[in-house]
Length: 501
Image 1 (cartoon, helix red, strand yellow):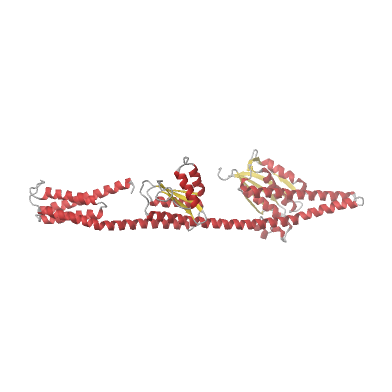
Image 2 (spheres, rainbow, N blue to C red):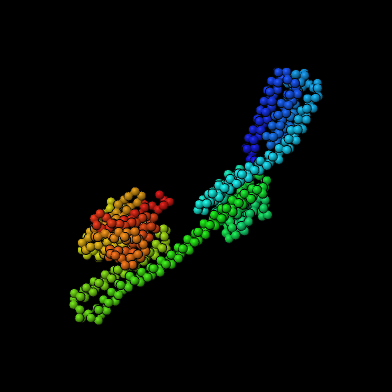
């Protein structure tokens, strides 16, 4: 028991003892006033002695109470009154017998006290284990498991416990003074998955106890218990700590198994993704390559037989197909950058107008009879992004609108400041998207199947890349039809990444 609680318990038992004696004295004065025989008063004084022997944890209270009652009885109820002189030894013999009875009763109740205390301790341990086990029924993050474990231990022990993951434990050990025995104990426990420190075979002289959190394969962390005294933990307390550590290790092992399974699944999906990508590229690149081969062959073998108009048409077609191949290369470079860096892609503050202008100029060759308008954003509007990747997103969206809308369609590109970031919009009135395809707009290579409308041909790879780029910027992208009979594609980029806002 900690000193504060021990002092409070002693105060409570002292007040109880004094209160019991005071009540018995009051009753005794009442009996004396009624001229009741002094033997009854002796019986009354037996009651506080018995109560104190039963309630108080120390026999000192019974001994002191018996002596105090003896003196009090002698002073108040024997002749001569209000004097400590002794005329008759009989009452004192009775009180001495009561004193021996109180000692015997204390001895008997002491074992009961211990059983009750032990039962309470067991209930407290079981309650803490139950709460912790209930907490672990749901899938938890590793840090949440460590925090709940520390809370469960501290709810039982009167001093705080430290719970570390393996990485945190190594870091904590490294911060200890050179040749620190505690640091060596921590490293030993992490390496061997065995307890160390106070009461253990290894580093037994330490005032701290180190208990591993792990199973046969992995040590996930450890419990560091700074003991306030040299008294070792009881077997029940050690068992309690080991049970908590085992429960935490099981939960962390389940989480690790789930994460490994998810990693394997993602790896398999990634391999499928690569295979689909190669198949898609082989299919889509083959068309412009065939056109380039055919056109150059005609120019080489039949140049003189071709009219000037035919030659110009072939050259224009070769240029268009070269631009298409260039777009494929840009998309592939963007996809490679996103896959390799993820959310760690370098971002800077870019001028929104510059992004729109670069995307607009890059797609100017495909205008034909379309009406493409770029609405200027507010002056000085900045976007936190990888500029080249966002230009690629805008170009993909503009390009899709140019090649999959009516020849007279109007296309409008804009961006505006919104709460927390900037929103871009590519709007057209060129025919819209079939309703059954709207839920699948951003699915990878979905358009390789027979699409019911040319409106979606070629969207799959470009839109999938757009979504990947926007997601690594921690933003969102969506597409749908508008009230003018066309389609809207808009995306949002936050001002700052999560954790810096």
